[in-house]
Image 1: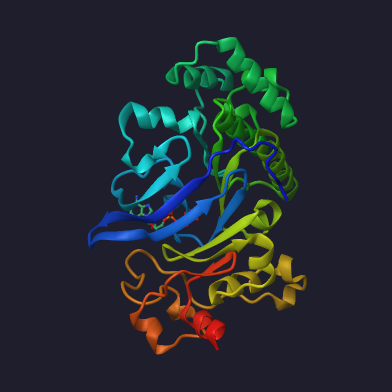
Image 2 (image 1 turned 90 degrees about the vertical axis):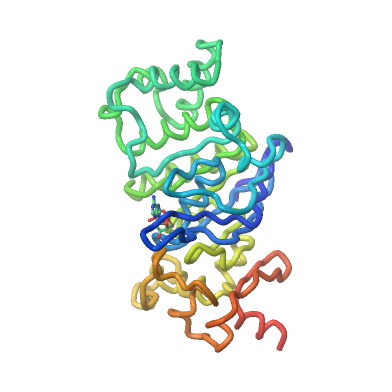
Length: 332
Ligand SMILES: Nc1ncnc2c1ncn2[C@@H]1O[C@H](COP(=O)(O)OP(=O)(O)OP(=O)(O)O)[C@@H](O)[C@H]1O
């Protein structure tokens, strides 16, 4: 597992974060009262089914939630920068890129099809007031080379001339080239074949360690976080239901949702016949319960209190679990 090589990386503290989207039924929370610490120099993974609020949480780290969404409560403190929730205009634009790099979903085309990668790099540099264009190109080439690509060729290429895995590496380069020390990767390997996926994860680990970054990886694929993350946070219906060191969470899951997610993966249990899909479907903004536990509809351990009271996130050593049933068991 990756370890930071420098003590320089900033930590990030998300506290009581709530993000709402305006819908015909009013403003509904996609992320509700989420608290999460990204330790300096660590890789944290956030895992959860589609619609659980992962991307919304990731965008909040850059204060980049777009209307009809907005951050309605909470803070995102980044060491050396402050609470980015209060940032706007030029200050916010500068923070993005220079402090926090964001790598878009591998499935998404975040590159401009009409400009070469090099031209886009120079645009990025210009928008951040970088005067040393040669230095910027050199740094980009070095990063691309580091990731096994011919830097000069890639900078001369258009998006359509690059494979999915190459584009994803270009995305990582663009997120890091301005020396961002906090990096958010949203589904970095979705839509890539298995070999390319493994390659990208190796690169993420190596670049993270070499540059002493603080990294957040968002994914619906537990296999991805098992590969790279030091800490793991499990998200469901806009809530973080379990957090802890990756090995502990995967080896001894406490929350019934985490247990269900792990059982549903053939790769991790080894025998494909033993994989059991979690019954039911995750909630949408409109169907997520307004009171009580968000997971109760699919939970085998459901009790009366789950219908009325939202379980608090309780720390059990390095683990944090939000479940009434786990609380009962711990205190039995
Ligand atoms: N612009 C928007 N307007 C209204 N609702 C939205 C908007 N963007 C996201 N949502 C809703 O917010 C919830 C969380 O979405 P989000 O994309 O953060 O989840 P996710 O876990 O990242 O899902 P995925 O893995 O599919 O990207 C979902 O119910 C989604 O439908």
